[in-house]
Image 1 (cartoon, helix red, strand yellow):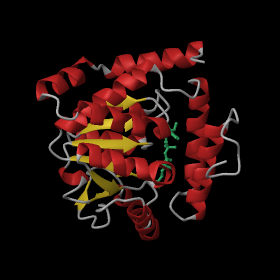
Image 2: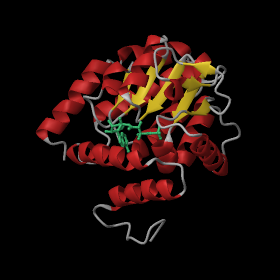
Image 3: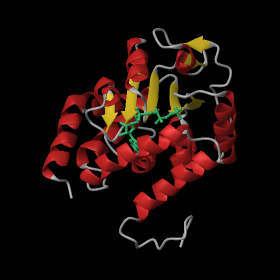
Image 4: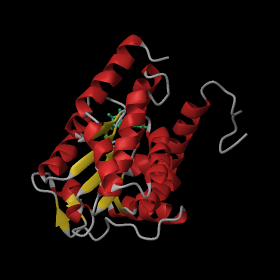
Length: 248
Ligand code: PTJ
């Protein structure tokens, strides 16, 4: 038994554990109620993908790790679902690629911002950005546009997991290189990304960290080659194909 009262050999263990974490996130005031709906949508796609990291997603996670290692100022954006599902794993990824962590919410309230920052600190984050909110993403309604000027505002590469399409597009319009984690290959966020990762965030983030640790110390030419050889539209097509033909 672990975390929840369910045997780890239960066939739906990972899915039930994920649901439990999101539920606990809502109870703790870090995840919005809409986060439950977003989780259900993601789960449906994950089921069709066989609840596994397909080869094109693994390639995307490797390219993302290389891109983050090449970045001057990478930032990992965290919302209420991400905080509930993978807080310690986000802290580990930030350490592996020397990235900032910034809380950036769709349904922004100061109370949730504070609760998520505290939750990340409980899981080892030294510094959490997003609370200063002295920067703005142009062409977005007020609350959703708030960022830290020295965080996402100054970033060259941003990881935006489980993001809404509008903000993903607005960030891309600012010239940021976007790495999107989204189980729906048809979502606008995934379509907008330089590197779309069609995988469950609970698998994607640890795998990005593993790739980053393995690539650490590589020549920048090697990292550039990994990034250049990755083609986002091919990865999206491979994910759609896996869903259509049944990856299981
Ligand atoms: O905490 P907030 O206020 O910033 O709100 C966060 C949510 C996620 C509620 C908000 O951004 C939202 O409503 O997002 P959407 O538009 O529902 O998009 C979420 C996307 O993430 C969907 O395309 C889902 O398929 C996908 N998704 C859901 N769970 C996972 C996922 N992708 C990867 N891993 C998951 N576990």
